[in-house]
Length: 329
Ligand code: ACO
Image 1 (tube, helix red, strand yellow):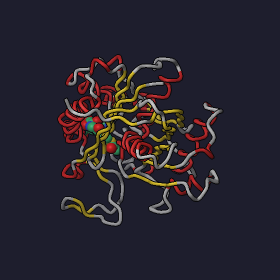
Image 2 (cartoon, protein in one colour; image 1 turned 180 degrees about the horizontal axis):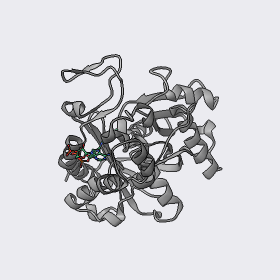
Image 3 (cartoon, helix red, strand yellow; image 1 turned 90 degrees about the vertical axis):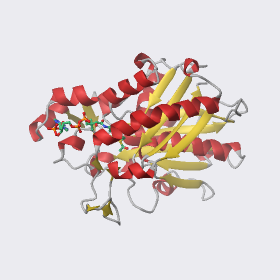
């Protein structure tokens, strides 16, 4: 029997934010050779929320943290010991978004501030790292923040990516808890698949081609196949490390990239689609933010109840993946 992986930590508070402006499928029908029917059938997406002209990733992060604080009056931002921010669209290469948050909230200079480049897997990766920091006794409270303004990096002339992405922010306070509530933390990467989903930066050549536009490029069908081949094994590993089986899981919360792909993933696992939490219909693919955008409404409307177990599974650009099991308290 393998050793069960667990952390003396729990999710103590959550917050989310989505910008006000909305792009519907009808808006894309007017701009591109596409249709509401194609988008809904292939992706499940109906709307996406997009940043305003002067709204950046740090603003989305702050709005999500403010939402967390508004919903949890007993949580004080001053109690946070460490900030982890997952984003693939930070305002700057540096300063980091986490350092900007430290300054915005006037947190002490002793607060750790770490940005992670884990694309759509940022929420699960961030929670797993927070578990390590708390588990080793370095800190008691880590604020894991995810924020992405992916529409800033989308090529609006390319119908195969333009219709997919939206913007938002999410925040989770991970707190020390003598009784472990986070299990089976697992992470991985497959850099050979990086060429299927990339945005160039200081270096503009990738896989033998030069792309100086620095816009998001995706070979959707290759990523789709990669997800269906690799994510079921990752789920198996998480469950094994948690000492659980799929029957112990009440809710599956995968990265909401594409509803059709998640339906296929559920069939492979197998796991009931009705117990899978998704945010893709209202928000599109919001990268690292898609998991909190699916999870928080379900917590707030009472679908997720104390004692239930959720399997979070992130995957995306890199290609990278990470997951864990959360026992809800
Ligand atoms: N409207 C109409 N037709 C379209 C559109 C559109 N918006 N986009 C593509 N098409 C066409 C293509 O041009 C192609 O036409 P052709 O057959 O004449 O050449 C046809 O539709 C099929 O194209 P595919 O790319 O094979 O379509 P597919 O069914 O694979 O759907 C999609 C594309 C939605 C992108 C899908 O592959 C997918 O969701 N992949 C996974 C994405 C993902 O999970 N990403 C990872 C996380 S994201 C991150 O990390 C940032």
